[in-house]
Length: 81
Image 1: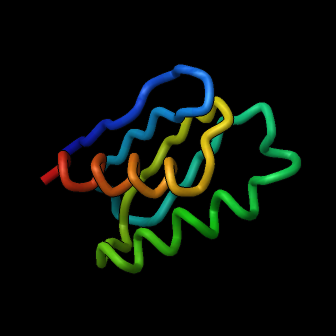
Image 2: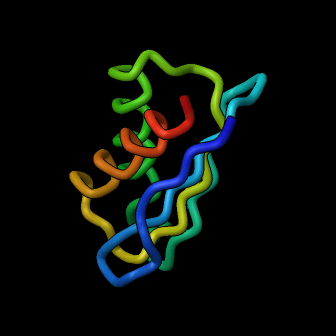
């Protein structure tokens, strides 16, 4: 199963989630060298709240803030079901 949410517009992100046998987080971002740890922390918090453990998450970031990342990830997870 696969879920997608977001866009590639400025200040947004496109998140794709798929079922997997392990947790895998891929972040493609021009600011990853500065904010990758914070982005991962946000993603892990959402996964905990959504009770998800084994997903492949690919995030194409265009400068999204944490609340945008949360919203996009929640929608992608719920679209996956």
